[in-house]
Image (cartoon, rainbow, N blue to C red; front, top):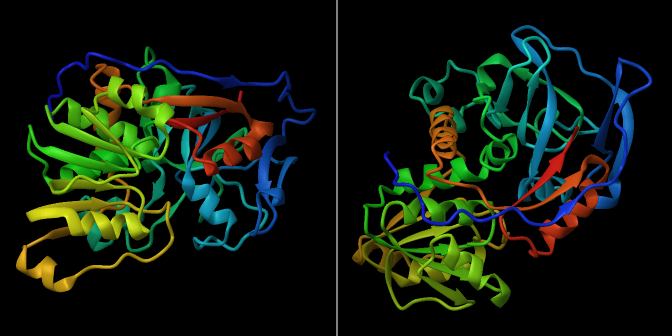
Length: 350
C-alpha cells in the first residue's frame, strides 16, 4: 500500500561491540553461539563448530546481522518446541551474503513446504509442515547458515542491511497484523507492547495511514521517542475507555483487558508471546458486541518483500535499539528480557 514519507525517522543508538576477530584457523570451522540444553541463558556457549554444507536446493549464506527476538528467550525457557537436536543455534532474523553469488539477501524466517493447502494459498507463515530458523533448524547466531533457496530475498545494494535485518520478523509481523485486521486509514488504534520491534513498526505503519495511535508502555523514559515515531498518545500502564482497533503483542491479562475495552464491532489482532498467562474472554460480551478476535502469526514472503520495499523508499525506518557482537548474544538476550530496549536489538556477525 502506498505509504507517504514519514516526517521523523529515529536514529540508531547504543552500539556494543568488542574487538574480537572472527577469522577461523580452518575454512571448515566457524564461530557460533550454541544452546546446549534448554533452561537458562547460561546454557549458551560461544564456540568453534563445523561450518555447514548446503544440501539440495540450499544456499550457504555468510551472516552479516541477526536480530534478537523474544522467540529466542522462549526457546531457551523450553516454552516453544524445537528440533530437539542440540546443540541448537538460535536466531531467526537474518541478513547476509550468498557465498556463491555474493548477493546481499534477507532470509524469510519461516520454513515452508510450498505444496500444502496453506502454502498454495500464499500463507507460507502457517505452513502445515513449517518451522522457524533458530527453532526447528539452525539459526543466524553464527558466521554461516544454510538456507533453502525459496527463503532468500535479494536486498538492493544501496540499502542498509541493518535496517532490513530489523524488519525481517518484527516489521512483517506488524505489517501482517495491520493487513489482517483491515485497519482503515484514520482509525484510532491502541498498541500493546509499543516499545518492541513489532510495536515500533506498527506505530510507523499506522502513522503513515493517518491513524490516531495510542501506545502503551511501562516506562516513562520511552514516551518521547514513541511520540517522535508517530504515537499521538502514550499511556503508562493504563488503558483507554474504549477503542475500535487494538494491536496486541503482549498477551495474558493485558490481552484480556484489551478485549474488554473493545468498542462494538471492534477488532483486536494479536501475536502475543511476551506474557505467557492465558487470556480470558467474556463470551457473552464478545457475542453481543460482535467483537472480532484475530490471531496473526508472522507474515508471508510477499509481506517481507513489501516491507523491504517500504524501507528502501524510506516510508518506514525500523527503530534499532543497540548492536552487540556475536560473542555478546547472552548480554543482548538479558537486555531484551529486562524490557529495557526500545526497538530491535541486533547481533553483528562480521
